[in-house]
Length: 266
Image (cartoon, rainbow, N blue to C red; front, side, top):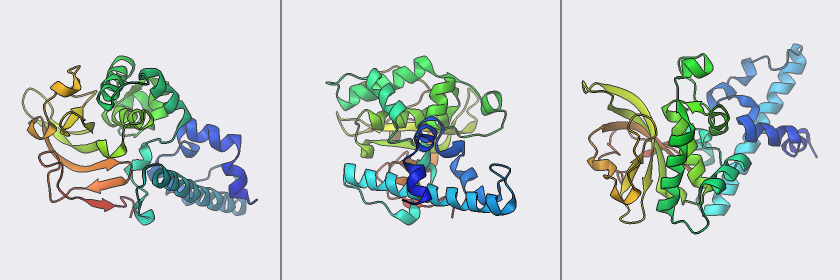
């Protein structure tokens, strides 16, 4: 058994992944690991530690992708797998426990989606990254948002998405978008992150927005996203398969249009 295998099976790895994501770093920060003095070690020790951690992160990604491929029969391009989808914590013990506490075993997927959105509306407070983390922009992992019970738009959106996955909703029915929306009464626009769901009743994509435009309307009574003028255009969307860039098409108006799977860190 090598160092990576020992770490992957250790309590440190399991508790760290479930609590904060690996080592508490965001994906962007992880790719800077060779520049970071993790443990105040001498250069030789720090370099070895950084190399070990970077190798471990790659193994974690491979294991996660293999699980997804086995569970759902999807094929994931390993070269395109490092993306905003890393903010979907799945599988994750704590999020699974919370999802199971929210839903009932006999619920339909539409009922699960509705209950999860309502739970987030009732239990997570919208608060800016500056107030919560002391930074202008910080993307938090879902377990961090659950622990703090606070977050901004994309924090709650990734939490909703992760809870829905653990509730057993098929991953091809869930997306989290990054784009811009009408932000206020003066019809100005603003950047936003929100989750959408392809409901079972008619296979229309509907918005599950917990922050800018929260709603308790039943899933089957919601306006299809393509008809909702408050959501203007998208930059990308995230699914369990990865990040899909949409530079030449509007996937809000036309959710079935073809996008491009990318590695956003390339």
